Image 1: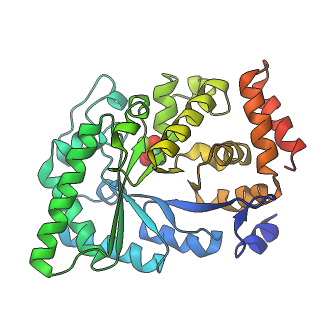
Image 2: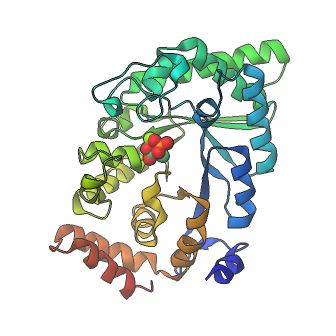
Length: 325
Ligand code: PEP
Ligand code: MG
């Protein structure tokens, strides 16, 4: 199988009926980018910037952050990289920041909420990203955004850092794209308000599904209640895709749940054009996508979502097999 995946490296993730998707890599260290070529990925769909903080004994300085982001951009060698801003709190506690012990950390003072309340820290990171980009393109996304106001506040800070950097260095990114992660169900109902302000949306299925099903992603005994291939989750993700299409927001997904062929078929069927996953999943997902008649699968999936039977996952699997998987 490894040989089969290796032979697909240079080929696009194109379905039998000609729809092409981007398959991207989830990464957190600059070393992870070695996997771009090995896996045949189109770029980095999620760079988890908090890793640098979690493995350091003291807070990374501006220079440390700039140098990491530069190394990442260098290794990407022109392929797109989506930097996700600090996603601290929840299960990613940083002792030096005196984060609170919370009853329900997943629902607590984390991620963009924490960043917006620590503006010095957040601004420093945004400045590092802008400085690292120099005069090249820069793509940034904000995690765990729940309301349009949070997005606007974060975006304004980034734009201030772009202006500041231009004044200081005379350099500005050739292209700035700003995205938002969909990790809380509430944001799905505010997307149309963000039309024209958000360049792209990336669904973080790890957090999204835990909130959608109220099932802790860290608790194995409830993890089978956490099913992406279920009528409720898929109808929700289809609705998100329809909203984004109307609002003109490009759509992608970067949670771990994308990493199976069946999930990839479902996302592709709904119009998610970019799937980001760990390196080892790229080969199998590409191989599967290249075998599927997506239009046929889409029709079958829509019909199954009208009338799901008790063994829904098997039903969807049957549709996939019928259409080439
Ligand atoms: C997610 O929640 O799906 C995600 C990609 O972010 P993380 O796993 O880092 O929380
Ligand atoms: Mg998350």
